[in-house]
Amino acid sequence: MKIRKAILDDFEALKKFKILSKKEELKYSQTLKPLKDTKAKYLSYLKTDLSYKSRAMFIAVEDNKIIGMIMGKGYSTASISKFKRKGYISNLYIDKNYRKKGVGVKLLKHTLRWLKKNGVPHVTTEIHIKNLPAQNLMHKAGFKDYTIKMTQDI
Image 1: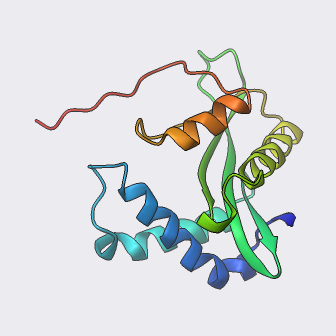
Image 2: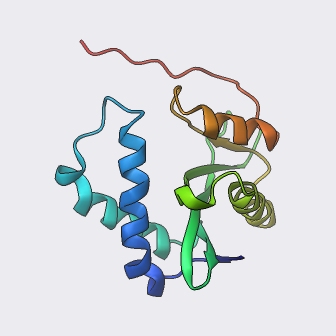
């Protein structure tokens, strides 16, 4: 398995993978619109993610097939933060046939190294409350719970 930064030329290969990740996310979210209504928007986001210098999508590839992906981005913070820059990790998705084999951990570590190299000393992520496998992976990697995001339909 090889991990590398995805580039715009990977867009076609990543499209299907991105949609698979969103199908999985829909299992955990009651606030997202159906995929048939949002597919074009997700693909537009993907193109943006592959184009911005402050973002990096890393992919795990085995036998010329994408088996995992993760997005990392760095950004400048408000003046009230003790950090000048922070990072955000999202879109971690591993092909079902490759889960529990260390792919997610390797992608996460690769992304954290990239963020650190790009001047990011503090990283956050959001995980759906019922996505216990993702929470376990992040806890195993050293992430700590620090807030609860709450919602209500009114």
